Image (cartoon, rainbow, N blue to C red; front, side, top):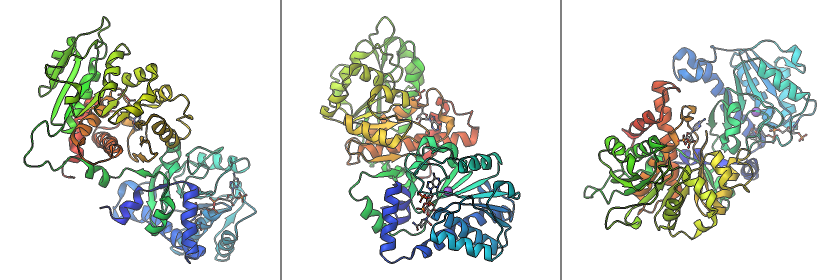
Length: 530
Ligand SMILES: NC(=O)C1=CN([C@@H]2O[C@H](COP(=O)(O)OP(=O)(O)OC[C@H]3O[C@@H](n4cnc5c(N)ncnc54)[C@H](OP(=O)(O)O)[C@@H]3O)[C@@H](O)[C@H]2O)[C@@H](O)CC1
Ligand SMILES: Nc1ncnc2c1ncn2[C@@H]1O[C@H](COP(=O)(O)OP(=O)(O)O)[C@@H](O)[C@H]1O
Ligand SMILES: [K+]
């Protein structure tokens, strides 16, 4: 059972949903100015943390950017994001900071205008021209929040560009001004934040790949939104959620029952590799090993059998007849073994496109199936995505953006709105779809989405996807008979994979996480945590 705090930290909303949730809070009697006061008070305290902890040595990593009592420049927009910023300015002023306000707008919302009047009355300098601005240590960005709907044009666009060029740390309130709240698209131009303090609930745009260059380090400022209001608004819509450690760890097949045997702990069949791509088969198998799966069988071309045995002595390696090009020509399973003997099948890494008949064969099986890499390219060529709906077991597709576009050419651009794209692909295909990226997104056919909120560019490296395929196949095999939604298992694999990358990068730098090393870090992620 998740605590309320954990549940809140999973929720992802669009601007329209956030507005509806806030509308309910106001309708229930919470005054708008009181909520702004509460939220901005929390922001001011967090900013104070960033500098005061510098002396106390707490949260060192977060505060390295700010000296004690930095001079703070506050950027104020016309709406309530600007209102928040003015309350922050007032609070920091009273707490002893040197503060100035920059307000490049004439027309303000009523509440924002009142806060401006008061800020001026207590002597906070307010400027309207960028040329007038004094130096400062940090900028607080309250230009636009979730109310931004139109493209930013000059003169504000050029103001934002100039402020970015100052190269100061910038703390954005709610989201970096200029980003679309839902898609993360840059609307003309946007503030490049060092930190984003997202208010109340995670905004979807902050978890879209195209926003990440602007978001910096993001954290949630929880201002006690009643859970009942969140539920009421999100009740009938497909949920978009962040994968958190609590949910991922609770999906792991741990602890094992005391009385069990290897086949009860899942039997995974991997079908991978070719003479040309031998390494992909090894990496996939190492990913599967990392999952703890009870029994691992690996079908590879005959000429790769010895190589696989030498790397994975515990696996049953099945050498298959090969095509002239060195791809698997035919699945030759051991006697009395059928595809239906396995708990799950993962197929694709390193196959080449010459293994078409193999992909057809696994698609015709009644087993949970993960298709990746050439498995996906072959599926796209076969044009049989519509038949996935009729498979008696789940199909999981794990494309990167290129593979995604080949598989789903009529789904709107996967670069523009990855959440919508992955939802459409899953609904269209009846498969669970994992769209790889910096913020990997996973959707089920009903449109529910998980997003992995943490990863590392260290994973942008050949072979790391193979490790994920093996890990995912191994997890699926272990929990195939349990009542866990498949998308939760896929999300757990994505989280585990990302965390292994983060851990490896923290010890070895982002250049030190080759795919083999990544596979060796899988175990370290869960030791002591589950
Ligand atoms: N609801 C609450 O009380 C709470 C809300 N909170 C805070 O409020 C924020 C949302 O506030 P918001 O709705 O006022 O919108 P916001 O993001 O400040 O900007 C909209 C303004 O910008 C203007 N504008 C738009 N596009 C433009 C463009 N391209 N170029 C120029 N102008 C443009 C637009 O003007 P208009 O469209 O009317 O011309 C409008 O005036 C939210 O992110 C959070 O920080 C928290 O305090 C918690 C309580
Ligand atoms: N910039 C990034 N940040 C975080 N994760 C990334 C990034 N780039 C790639 N990844 C992850 O690395 C993996 C790459 O997989 P893939 O493209 O299939 O590689 P390969 O086919 O070489 O194994 C995916 O899990 C993806 O989510
Ligand atoms: K902002």
